[in-house]
Length: 126
Image (tube, rainbow, N blue to C red; front, side, top):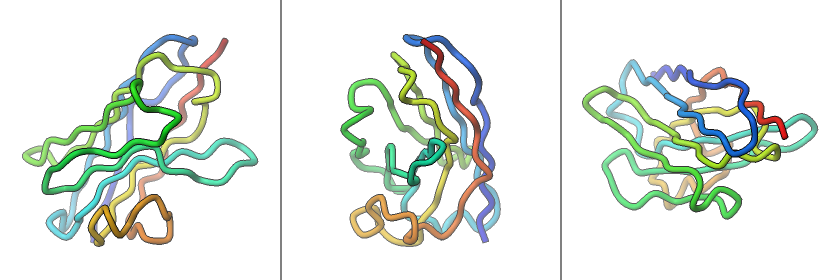
C-alpha cells in the first residue's frame, strides 16, 4: 500500500505561482509512475504531468507546458509540481497519483493509477 498526501494548494492571482507537494509513504518502492491530475467542477479528471519514479523525462499536458514543472526527491519520497504563470483556467482540485505501471503504459488514464491522494485546491483569480 502507498499513501499519498498533497499540500501546497491555495488562492493566487493570475500570473502567480504555487508549489504543490505530494508526500508518499508506505511501500513506496512499488510505484513506477507518479502523476498530477486535476479536476475542475463539472469536468472530468485530467492529467497534468507525470514522471517515472526511477527517473526520466517528464511528460506534460499541452495546456501546462512551459508553465508547470514536475520533479521528485526519492530520498524524501516526495513529488512536486511547480506551477508558474497561473491562469484562472488552472483552477481545480489537484491530485497526486501513483501507478504500478510504467508511465508509458499508465499514460493519463485515471483507472491505471492505483493510489490517490485526497487532493489540494488551487484557485486562480483574474
